[in-house]
Image 1 (cartoon, one colour):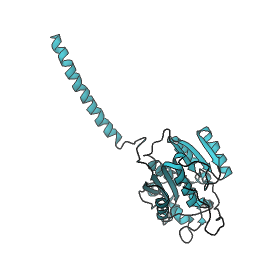
Image 2: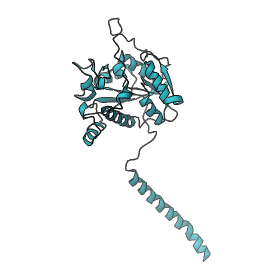
Image 3: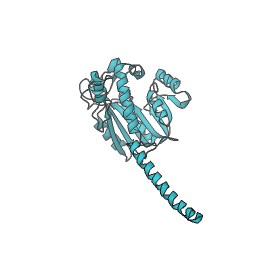
Image 4: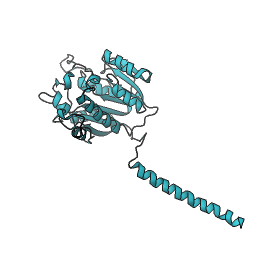
Length: 286
């Protein structure tokens, strides 16, 4: 699968939106709620992926915030970033835990299927050609792909903040983060189905409320930190499984109840075996 050309059909390179520094915005009250919501959704979507010994590449890793989360989850991580200053910050943040490369997102210097998993988080909206980036991600991933982007189908939130006019237009981002595109989930879905191999798609989204509700209070957390199974929130995520998913670190539901029941059954089994085993010895003693 060849990488994209980065052209807009007229033979000229499209204008590249300014690459923001999300790490500073995530320190604000609004940004911290958005970060917590995206982290929760990310962890939920990758829960079925095996981690130990599996290689993961984050295209457009920024300052390395999500790359660090993915390393903590157990992946062997690498990052790629087109902005030199953000790449330097990511290298400083991760140290020896990750390999950070600097270069174009549309043309990556890796062989086909060089990584088990590839993720694109908060970078497609600032790529000169997001479809070329998606082609490269599909080319490099052998097991799975995870995408996140501002949702053009959202009435509020990131979609409303970034959108001016029709979906896909550029607009002003939150807290002066620059100008970025918003993507329609159905367009991303159709592109992957046409360009990618047979796979299973799983949607998720978060930040359902308007941007002014992204606050660290009861209402803000309830409205915006929930993970939705449909792309209705301001931040949409898509997981693409190229192989049957299997749990690497399964999470127990009602773990205490199940653990108590299993312990009771185990104790009963041990008592039964102990009684049967001790019976003949008592008879022999008599």
